Image (cartoon, rainbow, N blue to C red):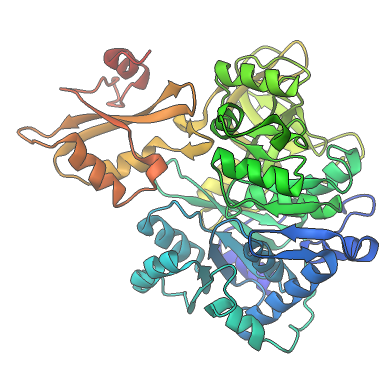
Length: 539
């Protein structure tokens, strides 16, 4: 039994029935993604950060060194390698090294609380963790909870003497050649679970390459453009949408390590960044900060917004600055990345998510899996495109790591069932009508109430808890919680907040706790959240 088939069986994954090639001259594996750039533009900057700059030739060499270092550390095809650090070239190089030896990448987001990080590392059975000092300390303190974890290495971008860089220097011999199966598991992207625990969406190198291949073939971004990445590269979708895409258009990827308005403007001005995606709050601050001048953003062309509804005030700001309506994408970890796109050719209206990207076909299905007519609401499902140059190229995710029931539910019928509700408009655009499992979008970050409710319920003084998202002009939504205390219990709002801080990432912590005598429930005992909103005066 090969390592691929062993993983597929052990972790209840589903290999695609077809093995389509990506058309044109696109690379077929992430391991080969730099080859064309090295051949065509060897001296062109490929990857830029605060502490380092690499041409395509230099980046190719560094990726090979990273692969050799991983091999020296005992990492083999199918092993899981996890990383947690800021946006620096180091994380891209480590990712490329993993892809060259067939290891499976696991990004761990920095804001997560230590218990959340430890859960993901244990669930993925990671053998190696590479992270900044503070995160390594968190992981080492919980290493007894992660039996698979053999090595924890500190990385300090710009410091040649950090543990990871010492291993790189000692890795003189190249890693042996590994035949990469483009359809085998290549990365696990954790998405917050509706049961209160994260679940890992598993993707192949084939699927990680498709968004960039489509962008290169369709000219969505100019050949050679400088693309910035501001949102965390520990999120797999960002690794796909910026470095992997940028290398396929022979551009330059700039790792932006500041998200404040002045810092972002500095990156755009100094590196002549033409495009980056961010949440509305970042653009709001960028367009209103008194120290940011128009000339600072001169090279920035029609930046995109992802992962959040756009408040009306932001839409006005964007239109005034860029002379067009905002381009919005709708996507998900399970896709991976965007499955529809609104290019700004239509003023944003509530729920507008645009049209399907070339590699997929969107189907709106009823509860029985049958298509609904235009205008009717159904579940948004994602299938491979059935026409056009990318017909049949897209393959669904391989499933949720070690969760056969969740995998079967999401991939029934051979297509991805998103759980989101939507409809097709008369204009051919798609509109989202309901959020999957009450998902809260706070500043572009996905927040699932079940995760927070699970933590709050650990306090014995809490009899019941319900978490809601409330509209906010800057962030899209803010998180609040309604609390029903146990009989005779006394607890303050600050005590509950401190309880959450110990277990949750800060962006998930409720900004307000409402104490109520009882929570509205239906005949089955389930909390009725729309009634709770009315009860609290939240609309």
